[in-house]
Image 1 (cartoon, rainbow, N blue to C red):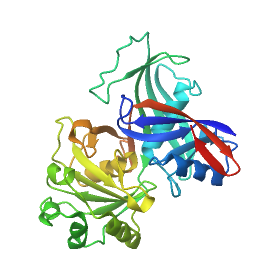
Image 2 (image 1 turned 180 degrees about the vertical axis):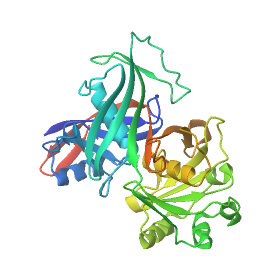
Image 3 (image 1 turned 180 degrees about the horizontal axis):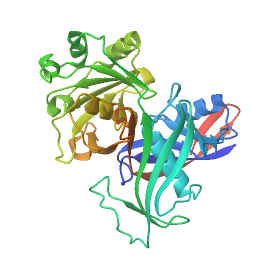
Image 4 (image 1 turned 60 degrees about the vertical axis):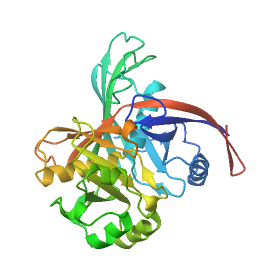
Length: 331
């Protein structure tokens, strides 16, 4: 069996930047074991497999695999997969907002695709601005402005982890957390995310945590993602700067996490840090190439539990995958 896989970078409009995910757009014939084998061989943070949805309410079924296991949800992988379907003309766009629903392990996820029909020039996107709209052609000719996915906040709880224990693993001074005056909290969007406030952006940027011990701590307390953030940012248009460590899911660091950004957006609203209807969050471990993630309030009556996150995406690599006798070869 031959299938095609696309490496698509999310939260950017420039290839080979942002947060990469591999996308297999035709996965109906692939078993769970084969999907895991493909993800093992590709070895990116996540591989999304697109199947025909069994739900009348959803257009497609998305499955997400890391190199070690299936996970229930991945924000950047949803954006990458939707961009792939748009590129194949399997999602046809209206002028304005096109709403689609994708079926996931946590239920049906709404996606709003913002698009403007026009005759685009070749140089529409500002490659120095990862949020600048991009020109697309084919069945959809115009400017793709942004892809937003809805992230429901399922629950939140105070963290039981002693600050002294977590700072020892992170290798930072305890006052970097306590001086923020903000709580450590675990928020679930399908991924159990520990939110850790830190005073200085430089502390986060230069951080080199003991990820083996962090993995052990996460398993002890039922945590999958560790999202360290600061209100001290590199870009004036951003509300937070962050890094995201996820050793419990078989990855050391996620360069741009949509699910964790949704959790953080909810946290900022609930704790009165912002009342803004729209936020931009920067994330990454290299100051010169930080991803920018859009975070918007969803329901005006329930802004802390309905969050939209997103941005743009760019195709970097198209690869041929050969599957035979439970072996996978990537071309």
